[in-house]
Image 1: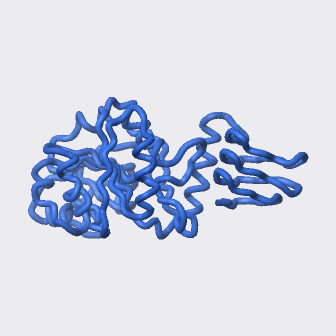
Image 2: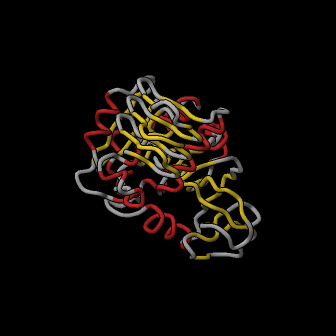
Length: 279
């Protein structure tokens, strides 16, 4: 299940007129990158929850190719735990892989699923002791979460927002509430096991404008490109594109350089610009 119902408040004003899951990263919406990762891993059935700009996500789901994609619409925000509970009919039973729509990471999904055996398995970037959003013991069990500690910590880590939720915890999901505060923290308090699956590769949280720009420049760098032009994009003569993405049907006018910028499909940017998103 891809969690995409949030308001995207940290990414405003971009999310005022676009669902956070659909902001373009490189040549595709962020959600398309996540779905491609899942498809490559052999997953054929995915549920996406939606609330903010639900009409946009509905249109995206209708156009999805190569996946059985179900949309769980939330008339009112239910929180991460409530959203999963609300999608039970679409998800069916058993364990469920959860992926925040604003996280781009080359996680080895089959390895994650194979490693899962406890109440939940969280993908974690390893850090030093006391650092990051989680703490782990020597056996890789989560012993600290959101500043609440439950046992001695051997190392810290950053939870990526990608995890496997076991059936036992799914059965206790509230109709409304958050997965961390209302499910994982109480489970740790009861002595249940949440385990970390360590991930040391590159990843991006596109939750803010700054990190969104970083994800786009990383997309270019991974492909050895200095810039990318979508179909029908127009760039005036003499403009230098430096780590810039110009979306489908967009245009760049003016004079000078467009440096570390993203121009959304159909938008117009006026050079010179640096470190900006034009939507």
